[in-house]
Length: 241
Ligand code: PGA
Image (cartoon, rainbow, N blue to C red; front, side, top):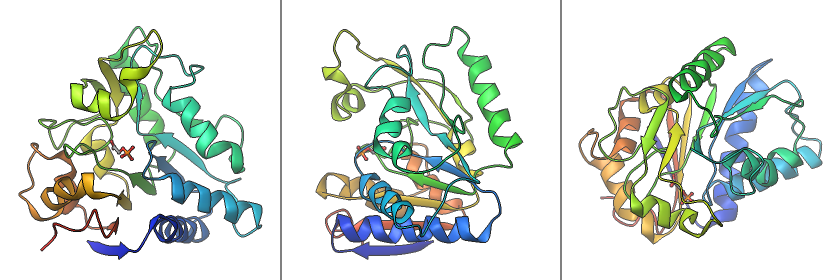
């Protein structure tokens, strides 16, 4: 595992964008795994800037989102599908329709999740997977207790996750469940880039990187992957030994 501790979010964004660009430059066709949330925002801003400057193109690429709230249509402002569109996809040049997300309105979650796994495999697997980490050690919506070989599936969200992610404030919609790529699915990505910033993540980061590999901290599974970059700001790295 490679660990980089950076000074601020601008540097975090620039380091991660540079890594992603390296993967894209090395492959004719690469598949990205995208995370929503606040942590990857600087990386998305840096990637958009690289595209605007003509240093990067995503025209030969596609992407899969990690997760989605169950019961929320992709057209809803707060869906992860809509969020990634606003935060990243609108500013780059993925071909139309190549950024896939889980259908939060499915009436057959098991089939939707299996189809997603098949679609990832059909695209050749994920070449570079961006990941945040939750304060409780979750990756994607794999909450503590998620098996480290879990696949894409429906999960129940903890109240803490609902509150921290802001979903408790959605108008007329209170998510209780989500669809998420599993820990095992994520570990199949060829290169994982996990990011964390701010003091609220310091304990989870310490447990994920230095604690036992255990489903109590799903992010600890990254320790078992042979090609991982972890990029932290100083506050998120503060409890590392
Ligand atoms: P955040 O979310 O980037 O908004 O902190 C990370 C996560 O919960 O995985």
